[in-house]
Image 1 (cartoon, rainbow, N blue to C red):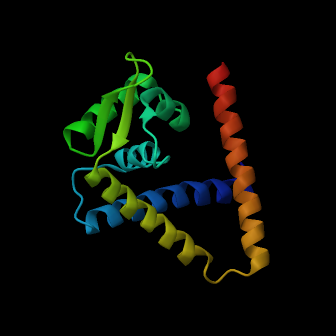
Image 2 (cartoon, rainbow, N blue to C red):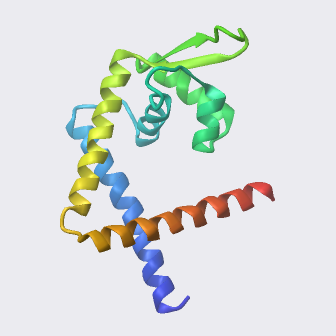
Length: 154
């Protein structure tokens, strides 16, 4: 590994950990002690389409997580009072998931955290730096999505 690769690896790992730690601290400071970061992101996926209920399969596909893992996590969130499961109106075999009032409140808090984080990160950047940052992060995201798809195909 050359010096650039080592620095890039260190920065990516450190940035990922720092974001998760900041998110976790924000959750704890808001008084939410019974949710993990993964559960917060699951609530975010459930609440994405505001007017619609989502199936567990939709959520699993979006998060690129197995159906059984999402089912277990949704059951846990239902017991905690954050989501509601109902049978689909169109197909009684399908389970739809929506946020409860408490789930919506938590999801809103999480979205606010992300808005503030992005504002804070970009506050002192020039327009050129913002464009460059978006371009590079998009390329990174594309690379990792492709890598994940390639590994899944094997």
